Image (tube, rainbow, N blue to C red; front, side, top):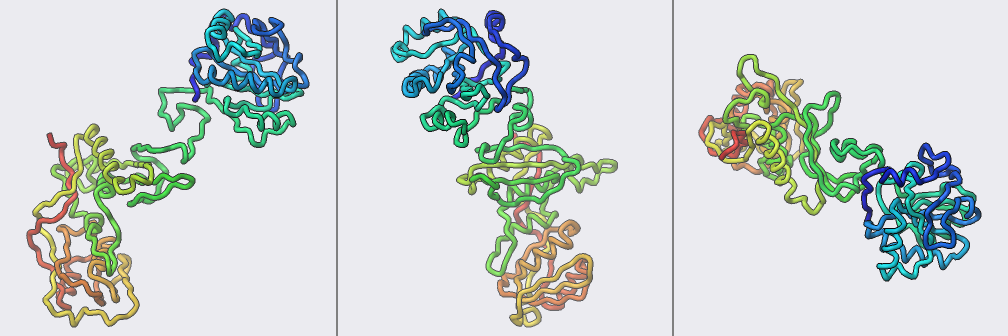
Length: 448
């Protein structure tokens, strides 16, 4: 456990009385450490010393404070290691606090009374060895070179033996972030120079406005993050409707064995119902002179154990933001609306499959619809997705109750709904305009 130091120079007295030769800038690992002079030493046979007095030994500077519980807890362990390695190492606890306070703590704490470590007081050395978190351990090798920085957990028998041979291959380096701007977001510059890795993030979500020059796919289902056990959904530069579609739909493309009709809510944009036009958010707004639509990017990261509640988290997130910003919310509910219902005349002789390899060819850039050995829902899916999903006036629903594969070969412009409707009627598949209560994505004013 680490505690944050709130300042670099703790008192005028500490700064004035610390003698640091040529320590105007921070040292880097591998640098030669200047001959630091230590004063106000207690619990030792001298009251002052220089780093050069310990040349030929491994030196560990233990920066600590009396208010730091982990620091106090580590001191007996450090004392024990000093006794074990004897003259091969020197462990020097260093604090900016006054020697009178340190003497009082050593006397009053039973676990610290038998300690033989020399304690350096009224010294910070924060400029030469910058740190923000205590305890902080600085390792200096036998030749006076800056070897490493660690926390107290890094000070072990094995690591000391490595350092004595001038190798630190198994030593985990402690890196404190010195430049901090806590007015910035945590992941966006608050700790300058800190690289957040996927495994650092347990859960997060954020939304941005339009990201210029950026594009990317829409992740409809939680996907695994590289290098992490977490899962995520990512949406880049999408309108508000797309955010609600992802949050509200359990979308999977239909197959011959899968009749999940959520794809109608994704690709049939006549199933998006705005209770009142908001021309900043609704790309289909018809108000004259108001057609600027805002796009948003959104990302949600959660542990994989939340896979089955992921969409609820997202919906709560999206609604929370749009309620605060625009006073709207999105829901999925049944509404009675006019629909194009596709029915069968009961005779499948003209569309029943002959059993060839399944195949669908619907391309808005060319004439014709070709469906081979595929379900009607699969035909609807590709037709809505690649042709008429944005242009059809009323929702389309499949009421044929025909679940066997079909064959269709229509030599028509598949982007013209009226022409396709007439051709389907010729093979016994009839579109009728009727009222139906169906699932809709409703975007409305926040309900009280």
